[in-house]
Length: 162
Image 1: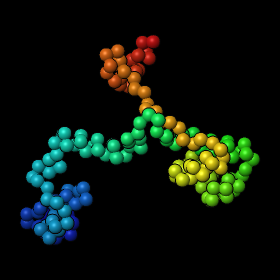
Image 2 (image 1 turned 90 degrees about the horizontal axis):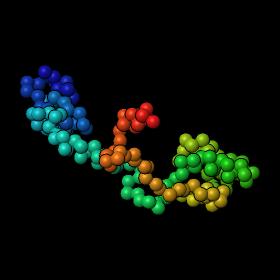
Image 3 (image 1 turned 60 degrees about the vertical axis):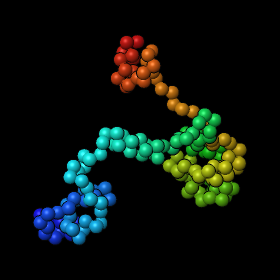
């Protein structure tokens, strides 16, 4: 067998985890990772896997820790910016100068391909006299009569029944 990292011939390789990948390596290369127990990739319990998934979801959630009354960027911010600029008779160049940004930034904002920073949002709100922030509202969840959350299949069945 050859070391999967350096290619050297190995009699008895060590199993190590290097940056999330499990490799069979020689003793020299084993110092680059953490040794994996004999059970390999399946060594994590189901609870540990679920805990890690939940932790990642929370880390990537843009609304983590938000409560009713907090402000978030409006979904239609690009339309609000474009409409307010046009109502004021300004070009993208004019608006860019008034908020000290490049014209390309304004164009991307109006297309919705760029989300404004908090600082730029305040400048735009002030310059255009508009609100770009809305109150945070949790998405409603549908539930059945007994309080259980409905699945997509349940909703389809209800729609067919009506």
